[in-house]
Length: 355
Ligand SMILES: C=C(O[C@H]1C=CC=C(C(=O)O)[C@@H]1O)C(=O)O
Image (cartoon, rainbow, N blue to C red):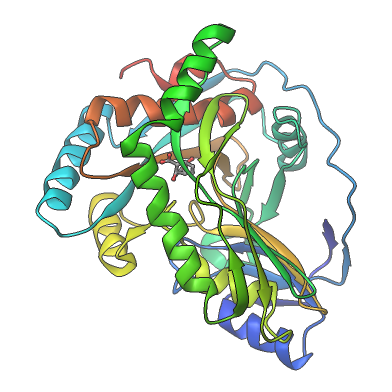
């Protein structure tokens, strides 16, 4: 999908959804923030091309990338996980996704479109995105969010709706035998299955007002990226009212407990307390056309590119449940950083250096 020009910006995503429904707007593209009350980077393009063509993969060039800051430091991330586990055990929430960020610096300016190509080269489906954030207002002028998300929030084609939530993770191994063992341990992990179930239940509830029949497999599947094994559940449904657009569905579902938690409002409050504003990490990027069709993926495994193109941010989070272990959660975020660091041509080991 590619979009050219900007006919109108929609910092309020609900206004964009309304304009699509009334036909006042011919399509929207862009990014939804994690907090849907914050400004969105959505716009109506002058020209929008939806095709099955994949982004040209570009082998990442080795680049000098340094870690400027860890937000928070690894020890503090573990303290936060421990504190959340206590709150969860006390019954305050069922699950909360806690994330940390790396601020990176590079001497060589980053070209967002070339970076999307480098992300595309790292996954078999050649999926990647690069979204300019200017439509979200002055604070985001010149900034981009670029990444390759394995997690499909929602696709709508006519009345057919498809979601593929991810939750539950183990790092992969270069040794095929160990890699298989890790995948098997994830499939059987009660803690990861519980983490996953929160997401699937949430989606079932959020789809119910819009869909006539919702098909959810009993067990999640094991899916891999270059760096990680995940639990994923393919969900299909049929729209009851064809006037419901892909953007309506994305707004009803984002953020799922794969990025937020359960209950949603409690988790949002805890995330704001521990992390502050997530900006576009954990939101969704995608498009919706004048027929209401569209694709939205969850904004993870990504890099925020500053207007100067030298300052970068990448984020990684993990679902915290009653059985979570702080050191394992820290290691999971370190493994998740590898996707973005590889695409940047950096050594993924820099994520772990002071862990
Ligand atoms: C929050 C992230 O991943 C989500 C998606 C897949 C698996 C996840 C997990 O196992 O915790 C997370 O819910 C991230 O990559 O930053």
